Image 1: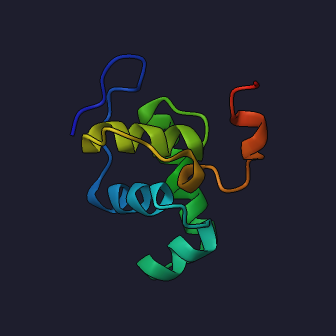
Image 2 (image 1 turned 90 degrees about the vertical axis):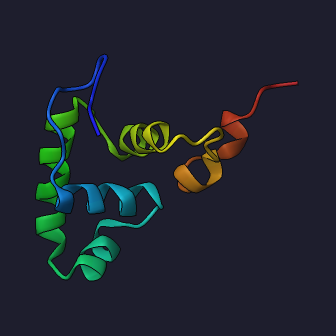
Length: 93
C-alpha cells in the first residue's frame, strides 16, 4: 500500500493498518482497543501517528483514505459518519 498525492509518503505498519481498518468500519477508539487488546490511550497514539504518516486530519479522512485504497466503488456516508446530521449532508430540494 502506498500513499500518494496530497497524502504523506509513509506506509502504515501492519498494526496501524489494523487500526485503520477498524476505524473505517466505524468502531470507536475504546472498541478498537478491545479488538486489538490494548488501551484506548494507545489507540489514540496510533491514530496520531497514522494521521501524520498519511497527511490526514481526522478519522473521516482516514476512513475515506482506506476506502479509496480498498477499491470500493461506493462509500456509504451513513456508515462512515454516524454522528453527522445526514439531513444537512443531503442535497436541498
